[in-house]
Length: 625
Image (cartoon, rainbow, N blue to C red):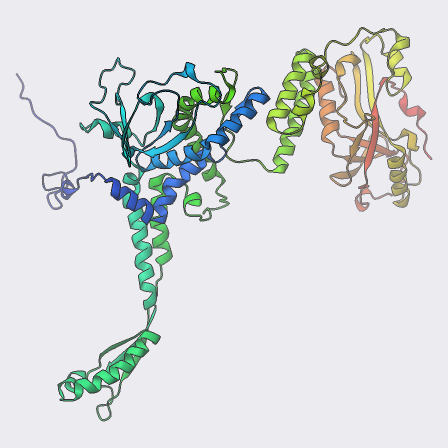
């Protein structure tokens, strides 16, 4: 049978004691000194940094408050009830008390305060008041409930509210507790401490004290930045003379005046520099505080880290690092606040709402709810971009026909009003009967060729009335004013001839493959006449295409997207890439240096889309002037 041996895996050092019983690190033990009610209040009121650490989370939690959802009339009543009771302000106060160790909302409900609250007895205005108290205003009557099957488990059977005139018994159902940070509970503590949790002051006190001490210590040294030192020769001998003390007092009085005015210090200079005629020795001493800012910032950053608040928010300092803007820190902080709203503040508001809603509406209504809005409001440019993108996506979604018109209109109107893009829209829509507001199935119409609404040209409506797949050509003609301006520019830059104004256009689709024109969807243009305008400026270029054609290329997201949609719907394209362009001439002079010509930068206004059967012999019909 073998011998059992013990093996120890670790580093030991006989000189330093590391890994042995003499390890100096064994002397490092953490201790916990609980703060009293007085300690917490003194820290909060005595330190500006501590106050910010407690106030900032509370302020940001309720800063944008909450948005009620539901019927407009109900929302107005709920907002009015919250304003009457001052709920946002009182929740903020309760959140501050949460950081200090705990607080509570005392609800003014019908009936005896010592009896359980009755939601069924609630009616309009029955929530009379809401008071905010700290945990130190509430004490438990009797033993804390420790039966896990009891709904009041972990809390008191009854609260005693301490007032200036005595105590009032309040049932727990009438009290909404904003408890502080959870305590581990590994050591048997009092039920009260476990219930209320631990003040945030306890966690950050050491870091805040270090920061405040560094600041005050350096501030105390500022008056020593420059000091005058006055040395009196043979000071001791002078004091030994019978009249020496009196004479010195008179002289020192003069120096004292200098000290108060000039920050001077008096000391014994010995025999003096010139023993034959000793006089005062006056020196100027300057102190430097190199690194003071770095030390103070280091303590401030440590306080920010312990409080878990970004330094950009707590200390008001700019973000550091390459290309640092503080945006990532703000996003992380917003996530923390949203977590607090969802996990901590939200449950307290849910308890309150079971009494607030019937007090505002006269009944319990499950069709109203609330959401916490974004903490950072987007700028006007972002809002405009979001609106444009949403509307373009909605337009494409509608073209699929996957959603019935009435349902689509309801959803789109709701999206616009809830996003706040058109504030007066909701009120205006409510004045319209529902069958008109949301639309419905259109009345049957005669679909014969004679009664079809004509497109941009009569031939399209008649040729494509049967929607038979065939090769397709789609273009937009350049409007006369833009065509005239483009021709004038071309002639002034060496073009001897150009296409006629009526022939200038941009090709949207050139599909040799047969397609059903009715599956090409609607135009992306949003002008009243179906047109599309490319604003002045932007990317422009002159290029030679094919057999002598000189074209003006330009950028247009609308044209490129429209072309891509039609290709996805089954159309073909002869080239790998679609490049919006207008052909200027097929007979440009051979020596014309396009690179030396500045491209036309004026407005390009196009008419509506024109659908035609593809004409492969189109080039023979082109004439230039």
